[in-house]
Image 1 (cartoon, rainbow, N blue to C red):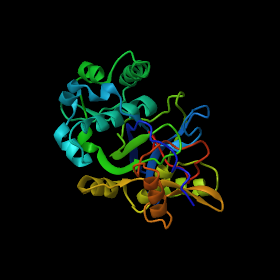
Image 2: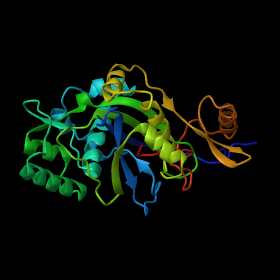
Image 3: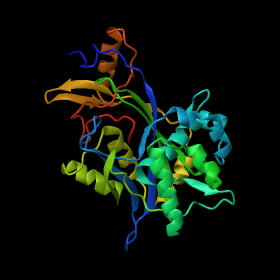
Image 4: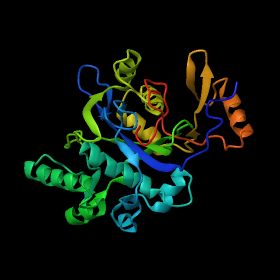
Length: 306
């Protein structure tokens, strides 16, 4: 049986970045917690799904002036980590920008190396205005850094996973996942625009709620949460990500079963057949599009968000 995506032609592929903010929860048995946002129910893309802060890499993320305000990682170093020729630092910048826009968390340090704190109410109010102006495109991330004397803390943000979504819709994303310790004196909040709710929860609990039908997760989110659930402390995740070598791209395919269309991952029995079908249709295997509506609850494939 031919793969249901074998007749489709690839649309333009868009770079994207998403960041998983981590902390260790309290209680008698502390557990890793990850910050998640719920997509607006009116969104065109994966409405209502729970995701990590993230989105597409845009032109402002590639502003050469940003190189001067990125601490601890050059563009050449970032590109080498991602396995691309140049422009790798833009993915880290996009992760920082999207995290600030959507969650109100700014992954940055002052010139003395201190993590940005919003403990002071006046400072918090000032940065909330920065966030409002950034979301309305009245300012840029580099302008905020220059005004506040900040450096983006890209050294503390580590590459963790790489997903390219399967054919099936016109939207296409090549998404890099990052992990970072949540700044201790900043409180994440959703923006009531693209995202409508936020929460901290353990990866295991997120997976449980997905299995129970309480939460909708796109496939990359589901699989990355499974990886996070293997650890007992956030520092373990960060240490592994910091020293990780090559991160392979995961390129799902769409296949058919008795239950209908399903997402196939490398290693699945039907995956090789789906690739062959695509090749026979004279289409490069591994091309990606965003998840069609309804391909969620652990079965879909992700896009600009995680």
